[in-house]
Length: 225
Ligand code: ADP
Ligand code: MG
Image 1 (cartoon, protein in one colour):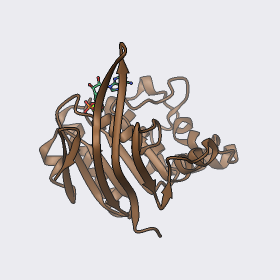
Image 2 (spheres, protein in one colour):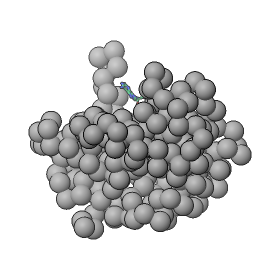
Image 3 (spheres, rainbow, N blue to C red):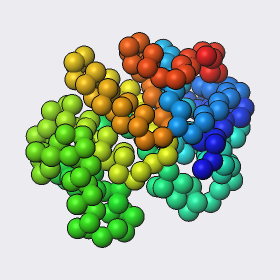
Image 4 (cartoon, protein in one colour):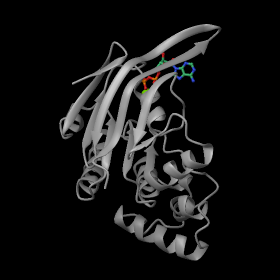
């Protein structure tokens, strides 16, 4: 296995707003070893989500290099990029992004179904992941009939079903009450710790960030420990 999950070199990202260039990240470097857990903190608007989107290959840097599992990504084909995402990377959002017209089990099975895996076996697999997140009794519920915490458990199961090497979690408990947030976070972190996956999670909760092996803050458009 590749020792380096992510290597980021001199990463910069600009957005153009009303013809004005806004520089959000500037000359940012990061090394994430396989199996490491990193917390990312920083004030609202500092570029945390921008960074996670770039690492998830959902957006392209203005400058700099991102290497994922030894694969340089700056000049890869669309096809190769999609393969890297599907086989190795998962992102979890604050607002779980579940598909409202599909049941819990269908949502979780979706990453397999879009990879053309057999429908029935994808559903079976999704059921077993929902049981792992203690939702075996909610398989056929639609997202609107689940609580916020349950919806986020579905999103977690969906993010794990591809067996990703890298998980990026963007304020995943930010919409939940304190008690549910802790319950979901503890469950999620224990699962990740027992699985040798690499994780970067964004949080404003100090009790959560101190459980990471390393803490980074985005400051001055760069990462600092
Ligand atoms: P954080 O997640 O730390 O709150 P973001 O990464 O969402 O911050 O945003 C960082 C900055 O980049 C903000 O000033 C935001 O307005 C700007 N920004 C983010 N996405 C875009 C976009 N697609 N177009 C223009 N500006 C953006
Ligand atoms: Mg954000």
